[in-house]
Length: 336
Ligand code: NAD
Ligand code: UDP
Image 1 (cartoon, protein in one colour):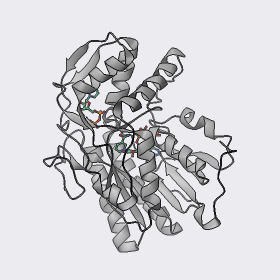
Image 2 (tube, rainbow, N blue to C red; image 1 turned 60 degrees about the vertical axis):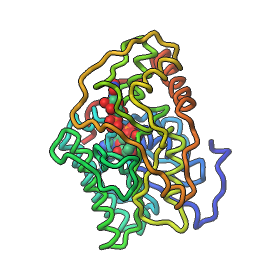
Image 3 (cartoon, rainbow, N blue to C red; image 1 turned 180 degrees about the vertical axis):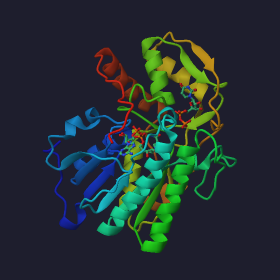
Image 4 (cartoon, helix red, strand yellow; image 1 turned 45 degrees about the horizontal axis):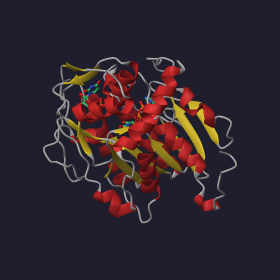
């Protein structure tokens, strides 16, 4: 990738911090930013991410990986920050919910303080979970949401809502240049086989010929965005000119039921797996689809990868990983 590195005008080349950069989305983002000719500092505590996700970038002199927990302050010289650090799978963010809230809220404080000191622009990886179990469908940014403040998902949902509040208050009170992206369900290569979200679960189950675990009746819906589209959207939002704080939805509006997703994965893998039904987790949203007209209008973005094509690439990735026996279990503990 070094040979392909484009040269950039001095004012156009950024020193960029990506927190959570060793995770699924973060590793793709680091890769894209390097390919665009920027310098990238990746900070991660490897709670759900792995060094392996960025191993191929370590020999690049424009890339640096540091072990850091965002609940601690960080002092580095950067002019762009993408704040992605946070477990995104319900299984992992519910494992230590108090720590999840700390990661999101203290992480937002610390990264906003850094942005303020450095005069850096900062983008927050917010989420469709701020809409909770939505009463408005599809969800535009103007919808305030329907979130249980005391449920098992609240550490994540309310944490991300609080982080949005902090971002907008640092913007209004301290003039920090913010971008708030509300990311909808995104999938692709480098999700961990033990991630626990629906796409890696179903793909791994189908490839192993194990039963596909449908939670509830499987009629709940999600709208799945392929990672390449998502990362492109985040980059465009960050550099949009004229830009603005958002919030802006980034996701793919093509909506499917969980049951149809399972059937599609069975078809694409040619698996003999059968569907099994398990209880629906508490507060599981019944429907979710982004209105992405703001992203189209503000920075000319819309997703291009069809679910079937993105799933083929994701299946090929997991197939390679599983047949080589090449994945390590998640550490399940954080670097202190
Ligand atoms: P992921 O779990 O693969 O990656 C998260 C990364 O953050 C991991 O590398 C993890 O080790 C790191 N991390 C966690 N806690 C940390 C801490 N305290 N300090 C430093 N690093 C820490 O998840 P992902 O899917 O790549 O999600 C990335 C971000 O995007 C998250 O903020 C998530 O809330 C947001 N998001 C993702 C999706 C999606 O569908 N992928 C949807 C909405 C929002
Ligand atoms: N789900 C499922 N089986 C699984 C994992 C998830 O049926 O093995 C369902 C889950 O109940 C939810 C949807 O798939 O309705 C998406 O779950 P995921 O954890 O990927 O993300 P969420 O959008 O709920 O945060």
